[in-house]
Length: 128
Image 1 (cartoon, rainbow, N blue to C red):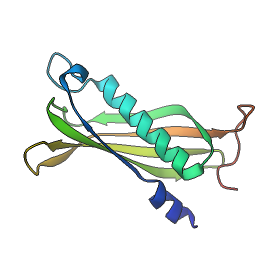
Image 2 (spheres, rainbow, N blue to C red):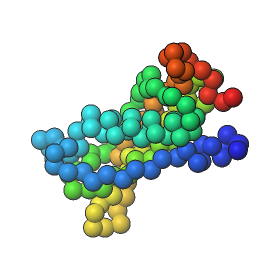
Image 3 (cartoon, one colour):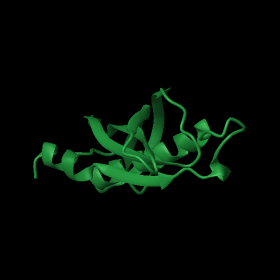
Image 4 (spheres, helix red, strand yellow):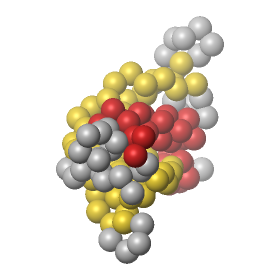
């Protein structure tokens, strides 16, 4: 399997409904909740790509372009965007979908960096 095939096969898509218990006093999704969901999708994507133990080492710029209102559906899409020796980056986009219409727009974008580690928590090569 080529690296491009592995990137395609590891793309991760998760859908969630935005309920009131995840929103702030403006009735929009908490930023921290969005980041939590993004890190989870990024972790799954990194693990599916490498099939190794992966740990988050940083989150790069996260841009909140649109508020995410309660009562909407969000789709999180994780894609490997860069592969290093022992690390990789995953880009995560969050799209808002209205429940009762076809409207869909990108709300949040961010990148997360991961390192592959062995059983002694030492960095190891991602591509063998």
